[in-house]
Image 1 (cartoon, helix red, strand yellow):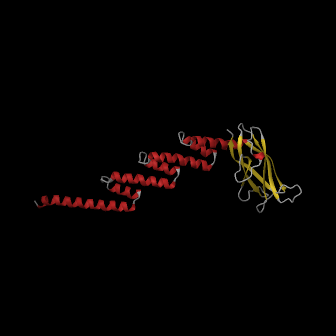
Image 2 (cartoon, rainbow, N blue to C red; image 1 turned 60 degrees about the horizontal axis):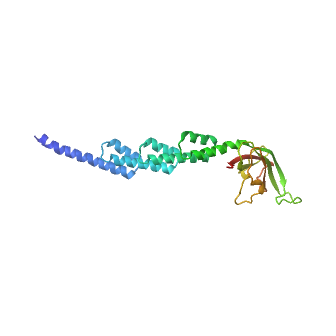
Image 3 (cartoon, rainbow, N blue to C red; image 1 turned 180 degrees about the horizontal axis):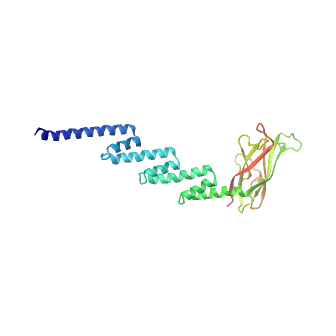
Length: 255
C-alpha cells in the first residue's frame, strides 16, 4: 500500500525534475544563442514544446550568417539547410546576385559562363551575357607596331627629350563598332618582366572625364579600322628596359 501511494508522488517528482532539467538546458542554449546550442538541446529534448520556436531561431541565425558572409556559397549553404525556410525566397535572390557579382569581379569568360549555366533564369543573365560578349571580343582587338620612343612631353619639336611614349596601332578585327577600347600598359625590364603596377589609357573613348579627350580618340572604331594609340610618361620604374607591353582590358560596343 505504501508503494502504491508513493508512486504518483514519485512520478510527479520525476516529472518536475525532468522539466527543471529541460528548463535549465533551454536557458543555457538561449544564453549561447547559436545553432549548435539549439540543435544540441533539441537532440536531448526532441519533444519540447519550444521546438518550433527554436527551429525558427536556427533558421534566422543561419540566414544572418549568410548575410554577413555575403557570398553565393553562403546563401547556397543556407538553402541546403533550410530549403523551405522563412528566408528561402530571399536567400535565392541573394545567392543569384552574389554569384553574378563574384563572376563580374573575377572578370573572366569562364566565371561568367559558369554563372549563366548555373543561373539560366537569374536576374542578371542579360548583364552577364553583355559582359561576356565584351570580354570575348577583346581577342578581336589586335595591337600592331608597338614601339617605345623618347619624346618632349610638351610637344615641342626642338624641346628636350624629357619623357617617353608608348605607341601602337590598335585594330578592330571583329564585326562590331567599338565606342571604347581601354588598354593596360606594362613597363618591362630587360628580361620582359613587368615592373610595378600597370597603367591605363585608351585608344577609343568618347570622354575621359578628368582628362582632356583628344579629338582623334572620340570617334567609334568601325570593323576593320585602326586607331593610333599613344601614352606618355616621365615616371619610370627602376630597372626599366625601355620596353612595354599592351593588353586590351575593356571594350564597349556602339549601339
